[in-house]
Image (cartoon, rainbow, N blue to C red; front, side, top):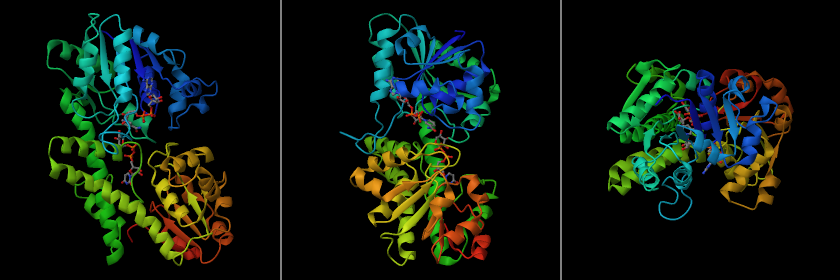
Length: 463
Ligand code: NAD
Ligand code: UDX
């Protein structure tokens, strides 16, 4: 099938950027991104392209080029489903917060709703593409829902997981290491795969488009995230050992990373990984493994999460201990709240957990993040449900100027590796702080020698 009309259900961090790039690279295809969230769609359609709901370097230019030409954002879900030959499902699949599998399994309610909606609306054959990250064998459930509509429509289900990382989404989409497409081994399944290959082949070299069976594709996505997160937890585990032995984790990471079998990426010690994917996908992997009775497999991967939780907690514990075992009533400046630089996404950011711990100790947090505002910060803390929203509000203040956030602070904690933090006038910040002035660098971002020369008591991760 030659694809000329695509619908994507879910206008989030994956659906929005992915469809914008498809629209940019495939001017002959009409791409409609739909979402139930009216405010989100309105923001995607905002006249000022700088107000689109997701901050990603380069994204607003692509949206400006394509929007209302061949890229459309809409809440008219049924119409978009009806018109499309190929439908990406790109809705959220968070960790379940209720019932069986609570805190572990992926919540597939949004996925199932999409399948039922498609089944209800579709009048002609369609290709359904799993873009969301899903437990292995979800396509089976989708197929069962779609094939039991009784209206004679044929559906092919493909798995096409997304590997973009936030902050570099546009570059990752324009130049992917690989595109993975899983489909049924039947002739119809293979035809559907080829239809999607033809879309990507407009800009991705064919040798980078991998074709597999559906289950391998679904499981590869969980595996990729588990391996990446495992590297971060591995280097973070070594960071604690470095702190006890006068080894320096940056030097260790460089030394091992030069071994081409290990490679240098994802070896940056940090306050802990965040983001909407790593923890959720590993918990899902653990849950699936347990469901098959593979307890050792489950325990092995769960340790990645246990290590990450430990890393976040020991960062906040160290702040309290270093500040003479009390932060009660003290002002601690936080630089950064997003889970990594170049994104406004805060989901599972380590900053949330560190703030929560410090507020438990009655600290007052003064926050600056270049892309995250006060309401989001409060929403993140309220979501943890540790204390009343009014108490969160009392203990956290956001500033739109980093120098004001740091003024009269006892300590600065760096939680996100925003480049701009390196360029600040740190002497000025030092002069404005209470003495001794501490920096707890959770991202090993600043130059230790320079900071110590200014007068700071400077601590980084793993040295
Ligand atoms: P998101 O929460 O940013 O976006 C999902 C959107 O789907 C929301 O706007 C929500 O309103 C919408 N939605 C939910 N149910 C709907 C329905 N029935 N009809 C219409 N819209 C509906 O999530 P995201 O970060 O874009 O992630 C989407 C999926 O992609 C997840 O499975 C995630 O694991 C996976 N993924 C995410 C990333 C990432 O970096 N964020 C990367 C790779 C894969
Ligand atoms: C991840 C995967 O990289 C991506 O392929 C997948 O599609 C979605 O999940 P993302 O979560 O957006 O992407 O960002 P990523 O760059 O992987 O960073 C995740 C977290 O790990 C961040 O908090 C980051 O700061 C942290 N991290 C990453 C480290 O602490 N050290 C590192 O060396 C790398």
